[in-house]
Figure: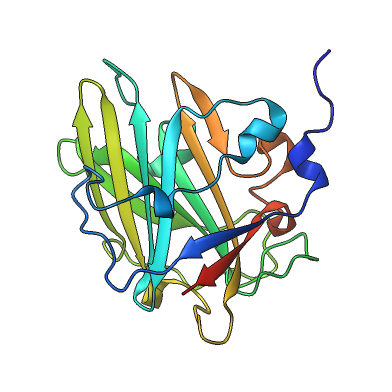
Length: 218
């Protein structure tokens, strides 16, 4: 019998984002990452096996994220205009970690990172931001190019890295607000979805209370 209520819905998660004095070099190869920055596999609570490794870290310059996806001989479907319909990594943040609200504030943001879909030939990585549905108030818009991104696509899969600069993170004040709302959704057209807490059926893309709390640990 399929599980009607996922175990992760019944819990409030607190995870640790480790500090780095110097954020990783963005090459797409993930050679500058270690397991110290690997995000926990909460999917095992619902019997879901991960198909990728997802990383995150921070310092006063911003938040860096990365993922490593194994997908031999994969053909990508990536379009920044409809990023949610193809292969993508999405990161959501709430710089005030307001756990008792169900609609986003100006401190809540959604970012997307794609392994391809950018450049004149649509074969370059691309990143951007998008409003959160039904938000009470949207964060200030982010101009194209402010999010640095790099990808390394091979026959075995791809690596993807991005840097979310502090200037693009609405309300990013680590010394005053060291607990933030945090969520990721990784979508692969061949493998399906891998996510931190809950999936589409529980409206993570609308409701910040479904995200985890990330502690910006030094």
